[in-house]
Image 1 (spheres, rainbow, N blue to C red):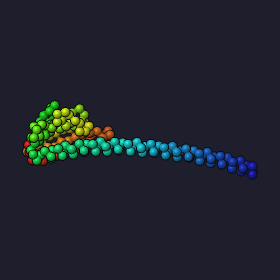
Image 2: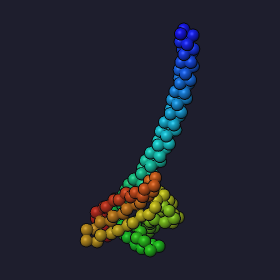
Image 3: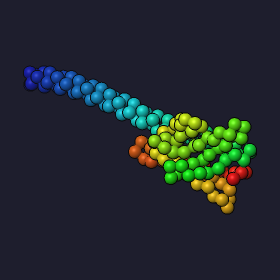
Image 4: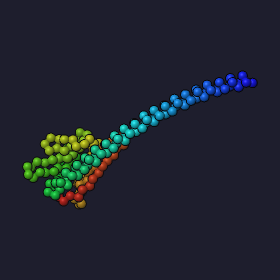
Length: 157
């Protein structure tokens, strides 16, 4: 009876050691998977936040340009490449600055185009009855298409 008990005890110790080793391997694999998934999720969140920040910055830039020149009454809407374009006139030197969508981005052109931000599209609309400009900038945020819009009541036009 003692012999049987000792054999059973030795076998039990081996099973416990094996189970402890397997538990450590499973814990290490789970930890690695968790860290990998969390870092991927963090990259996605940061990428989406950067895209949203870039669009908001572009919209605020356009907003500031419009407000800056609205007091002087120097804003008009014209067709350019079959799309509405914001045109800001400079009375001092007779130059015009155009803000429009082209080649995958929002462009500002004061003689040579400069991309303000990458975007999926931009819609500019002028409501004559309310004297407002509405512009909507669309961009890709991950797999979803998002948009940022702004409506400004103008003193001019």
